[in-house]
Amino acid sequence: MNKIESFEQFLATQSVQLPLVNFCFNLLLAAALGYVVGRVYVKYGYSISNRKSFSRNLLLIAMTTMVVISIVKSSLALSLGLVGALSIVRFRTAIKEPEELAYLFIAITIGLGLGADQFVPTVIAVLLITAVIVIARSRDQSSSSESNLYITISSNNSKAVSLENITEIIKPSCVELSLKRFDQSGSGIEVVFHALFNDISNFSTAKAGLLNLSDDVTVSLIDQQGIVR
Image (tube, rainbow, N blue to C red; front, side, top):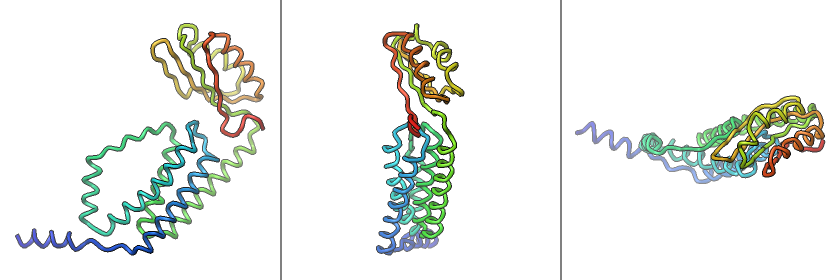
């Protein structure tokens, strides 16, 4: 019994009061770094999802992770409790693109580093990572004169509009073509391609052919770097 009581007393006395000023500073710094990473993701990301909406999560994740680590590191009992809680709660976040996962890891790294009071290495690492992203993506944008498009084709007439027909129309007009998403339910079909065009006029030719497949065909495109250069 003495050993059990000693262990319980050890756990009870492990809690340490956090310095409020240092905690607030780290929290504000996490918010600032999360905001910077979010802005870099919005401007230089290649994801076809709503980058502005997703970037708001990066700031919240960085701040929340920082708070959790700051509280847990001061108590062994809380650390054990966190392990138990994470084994019960399952986080099911739909990650559509690997790039989103990369930025999530950056946000979590910010929270981990600042929560452990390693603010100097954390700030330096985040600034270097964002600088590498900005330089690499800026060079990609300046060196490319081609139209880099994501094309979405949808129709409720899957008999007339098939994946094979769509591919036959788009492929001759573009330099590169890759299928990113294919959804078919009932009579509806939706296809997303990543296509590389030498000239935007080639897309107009492909679009005209797609619209001739059926009356209810809709064609939309997204160019992450701007359709007109």
